[in-house]
Image (cartoon, rainbow, N blue to C red; front, side, top):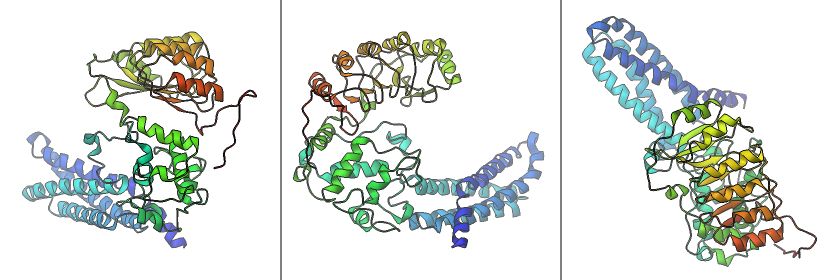
Length: 462
């Protein structure tokens, strides 16, 4: 047991060590090319050392890689090919050391190493991040894209598993539990694999959501080691969580349609929202071009800890993330508003600002997404958001906003997603908002809203 744990510990150094031979060998190849120039001919004397160090580090990487792969969490076909490509790279580096005196042979060796490193790296990326990892940047499915579920024409006629549950698993679970990688021996990319479970047994107990590891891991506190998805990966949303719980509680069937399962009002609303969701928020990007944002403003914001990123390749449209800041200097807010043409997505969670500063956000009329969760946005300041006519997504989770203040947003024509969990919205407010924002999916978290003494309460058995 100790020996297995120790080998597993050593194997986990592979992702760190594997970059050494890559860097050393590529740098040696650069030196080799430079040494062919008369000015840099003296570099030829260090090439044998470069290949020797590259070979030694490649051998160490192969050993740690073998130990890591022996845990059995990866697709054997891809893993074996990755290992053999790594071994060939090590042997080729040794050949580079042995034949470093022969410039003609070194050319073929250098070319071979470039090819082998590329193939080995691609296979390693597939094992770690899933199939097609390198091509995601060209397919528009990068990690920073804001993808949502495919809109359904009729959610009630949709298949519960194939159309509702499987897309959740694909987005949140497949990177670690699919064909190329099976952490804990678990695959979730096929109903048969879901039913089979992993090394620790079944993960799905039809009719018992809390007793199913597939669901239990999702609702664990994110700081828990066993919480899934792991910290740093896209997390299951509240709406996805209740749909997953519903599917398991209703029997975990893989073939039934939604309308064949019992549904609480919360489930009906969640399913209905799937009909309204857009395939991607970034399909709403403006068609018109805008000038490049002033670099002085961008540099100032970045120097203060704000993350400024382009929305898409070859685009001047930007996103701004204030996740590391809770208070702003006046100069920072001025720099932000100077990006009013380019700024489409803005995240300011936990932000604490004076009312006059909140009103300055009304200048950002191109905004599509705005996250003000857990901020001190007050009843008076929220009215300034009514100027954001292009807003599609608004997150006010954890704020002190009430229903009366929210009615100031009833004239936002593009608003499609509104998140209000943990606010002062009452059940009466919620009903009024639904009537005022008929095109908007309003998410109140667990679909529980504060109840007034004057409200009528109906208890439903689930």
